[in-house]
Length: 187
Image (cartoon, rainbow, N blue to C red):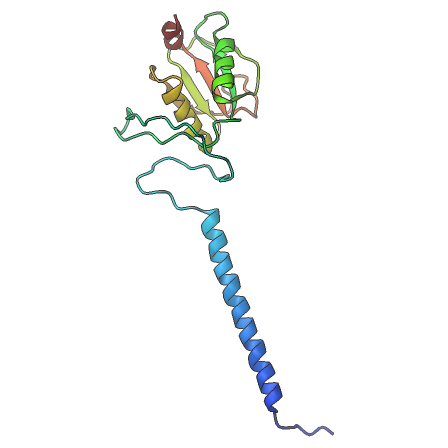
């Protein structure tokens, strides 16, 4: 008792198999981690200056508008966002034309599949230029699509929705303030 016995071939092969198995498991975990990280943080496409939605699980829109040049850079606008259907909107009448916000909201809901997050209302002050406010960075693409497709004949302003702008429900992704330019076009 107490004497050390020399190693056997069996213990050598068990040790070698265990080490190999550990090495294979570590390599598999590293490769799996790289794949998961690559899928979680997609690289922006070359030449694209727009933010892409991070949800990645939304179906693409079947209609894509033809790109139009932007006023700022002269480059082409991004294609339609994949999350148009179900985007939560609020429409405000800044033109002083009775029923303009309600009629426009009905058109947007029926034609595009937007969801009315709150009832149409009057803007707190007159609005000369139609303005679309977006809440999150990923919603900017929605605002750009709406500006170039629905309001294509207008020079629509697209701005980030900052806290304290009007009585806007927290669930609203796009707040659309209809201006006198839109009312004149509708007349």
